Image 1: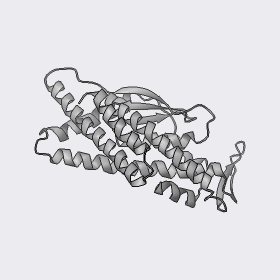
Image 2: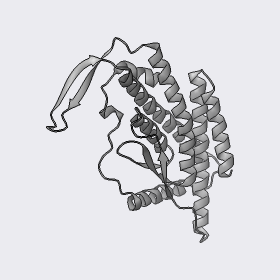
Image 3: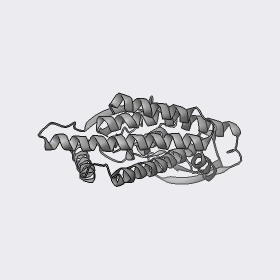
Image 4: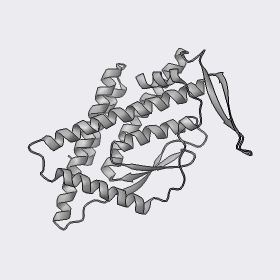
Length: 250
């Protein structure tokens, strides 16, 4: 299957996920898209291994800049968390801008394409679900511990305050992204096990997958210039158990 046909099929599954109000159907369509992406990625890894053994020049990993949002937009860190959760299940490594406006994605082109397709759909679902949660007012009446820090003295303290809508949204979307990561990981593992157990699978499939991982790690270590540690959304907002549970369910 060429890249265009693959993205068309993945896109069709994701549009079905976006178009349903049934959370179980949405999950099923999204997981099917991940399994399809995984199966195609395995096939490409095997093809690259054959090309290498035949003295060809197989496709190499690449770096791509993925725009997440404009500076100052609230909730960008949760969008980054969603993209990174997707990337972990698709053999893509990430470096993140300090202001969360973009991500440097490292991987093979087809894998990055799959990440971008999944992200484009899932971010719509995440925002729509969090909008519904905020409009319901379910977060009202909850209090939250807010961590503050004096940027001059570095002194930190905690205060308990009513849960603000923006904090509820960040907690909701953080939990949503984490649950998506779990579901995609499970779908990837299932697809991989099935492909390796398939009697018609290439005998060198497992070796090709290990070689791909080694090549990607080597490329990332050679190209990445990242310094420091990115702070996720959890580091910038108070913790809301209720909003987290709602985001996980969604």
